[in-house]
Length: 93
Image (tube, helix red, strand yellow):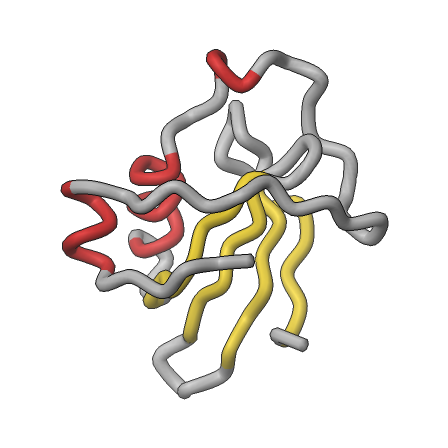
């Protein structure tokens, strides 16, 4: 489950989130977690797309990011943990 955080605080210090298992997550990587980008870096990459990040959580092989667009739409993003590529984007559930 994601823990909400303020974007500025997220860049300074992220609260660890538990690993979530989700069968609908796209395939990311088999690389060990030690090689993954930090949650703060993932949050920064997403914020550079003019989205407000509310949560970053590690899934089995990807990061799941909850974000809000400028128009107020809430989004769920699956992000590759090595490249930062958005693998899937959909409205938040």
